[in-house]
Structure formats: C-alpha cells, structure tokens
Length: 441
Image (cartoon, rainbow, N blue to C red):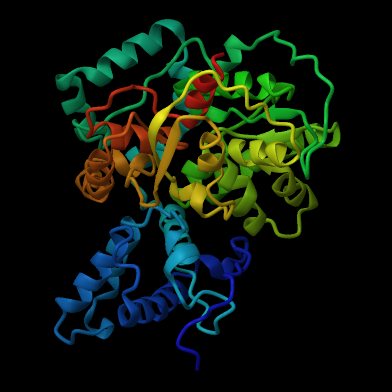
C-alpha cells in the first residue's frame, strides 16, 4: 500500500442520477471510510472548518478514534464544507489514482444532495442561493435602491438575521438597476480583424450571469473595454441562467440540471459560430470547466463548452504568447497584492492574473494563495459568519503587512471580504479594473 501519490489527481464522474447516490446508509458508510482516512492524516487542517470540526469530534470522543463519533454528528462536518475543492487539488495524497480513492468534496456534495432531497436544507439557505430571483427583483430601479438602503440599516439587518439567517455585520453586495445587460443593450462588438491565438478564436461571448450582471456590472464593463482595446470583439450571450454553482453548493442538483438545459444550448450555439466563452467570475468558469462535465461526462455539448470557456486572464495570456496583446500601458500600478480565489486555483491554469498585471511597467504583484473564507453564502450566514472571518484573518493580516497600493482578487466576494478588514490606498479591488486603468481607458 502506497503512503501517498505523486501522480496528478484524476476525478471520477459524479454518479448523481444513480438511486444509490441518495441512499443514506451507503452514504454514511462512505463518509465513515473517508473520515477515518482524514483523521489518520490531518494534512487538510488548515483549510475549511470541516476538518477541525471532524478532528475535534474524534479527539473529544471516548475512544479518540472515529468509532467514538456518533454518525448523526457527521452532518456537522458537512455543514462546514463550502466545496472549494482545495483539499482535493492541493493537499490530499489519497485522491485518485491512489487506491484509497478519497474525494472529500464529492462526498460532501452527495451528503448535501441527500439532505436537500429529504428537505433538510434550511429554507433561508435555499433563498440565498437563488440568485436568479434576487437578480430579477433587485435589478428593478426603485427596488434596487430600497434593497441597498435596507442592507445598510441596522434594524433591518437584525430582522434579516432572524428571517434569512444573515449575520448583521456581513457585507452584502450592492444591486444595480442599470445592469450590465442594460448598459450593453444594442451595442455591437468592436469591428476588428479577428486573429486566432493558440486555442482562442479571437472573439468572445461574455457569460455575465447573475453576479456580474446585477452586482458588479462595472467589472463586466472593464472586461469588455480591456478585451476590445486588444482587438477582441465582445458580445454578451443572448440569454442565460445562473451557472448553477450556488445551487450545487446546496445539493440542489435538479435545479443545476434545469440551468444546464438552458445555458448549454446557447453556449454551444455561440461556440459553433466561432465565439469563445469567457466569464468574469471564477466560480462560473469552474462550473462549466469542471462541475458540469463531471455531472455529464457523456454529454458532448457539455464537453464542448468545457473546452471553449476561459478565465479572462487565461485568455489574455494566450493572446500575449501569440504577440497579440497590447502593452501600451499608460499608468503604473505600484505594489499589487493579489489573492488567488480558490475556484480559480483549482482550474489548474496557473497565476495568469499575476502574469498579465506584471507586464505593466512599475508594477509589483505579490500573491496570496489562501482562502478568503467567503464562498458566497458561507460568508454572510449568521451560523458561519464568524468562522468565515476567522479564515479570512490570516489573509487580511498578511496583505496588510505588505502595504499594497491595491488589493485585488478575481472573485469580487473574496475581494470585499479581505478589503473590508484593511485600510487601502485605492478602492479598486478587481484585476480587470486595474488592467483598464493601466491601459488608460
């Protein structure tokens, strides 16, 4: 038996349509097997709170082994997993192809799916993960202002804590009635000679999805301006649903499937017309690059989207390698601290954001490869807010000591989480915004 594996991790498809997937007895047996291996290793203790929770349960039991932990306490471990996948991709020595076949995130996903099917996931968590409804309602002109004001009002936040399980101190994203789609309605892509570079076609369809459309439309605008400055025509998809990541994290796989049936045909239509797909939110890219392909390994359309969707800076690196990226930068950025989002790290694309920002003269980019602890709903829920802040503190401390001119993260939620604990010289927190500033556009 090998102690660990030096081979690259491989991932088995998620057999979520198999009735046995929802068999709770079989699930508990697999959780017991995985938890016992984790207890004997403990390499992932510095990641999310699932591991300290598990190890505390073991260490406080009568036997000091997993057999002393009640199976009903296994769900406490599940509740702390926000499925960043870092344990699988960066820490665990027992992932496939190792014969122990440890896939902690997928076991947690299976557990959440069992809970969801039994109706045991909190209603408030279901509502918080329903970004489609939030975006539709909150984007209305008068409603968006009212919601933003309410989110800042302490008495209202106290009520929201009881009703929605939202911590009163948690930062909630702004809603914009002038969405990215409204800003770009009727806009034609820039006219340019389309040039291929590596696997990229040279023209891009932006999958804006909920967050970039309603919460951070400026980031979407910055992406369009940077890409079109480089001669890359950009259009928005004609229609789209949520990528499905918030629902996946709740174990609501049926809704993930519903979103897939609406998103994939539209993306495939654009790919067949010669457009590459780009999304500004790392979680959206990961959903199409990894999660949906693992749920639908035999669906050629899902696999086609996987092969043709890119992180924005991954796309720009391909252009740079082909000599097509403009380097006519007008403004130095000084010292930039870049927090690498978990959902970008596990795409295995390398530090592409750093590589592009470092091209700007007079710019130093320092990386922090550690989780911000936000992960969407985990960072705002009353039951997990304090733990989220605890995970973020080492990142905030390290970033503060670096005394940066800018603190950025490709994930807007991670950026807000970290920036909220710092006094920054400049308010911009997205690397696409910095790149636009560097170009002087």
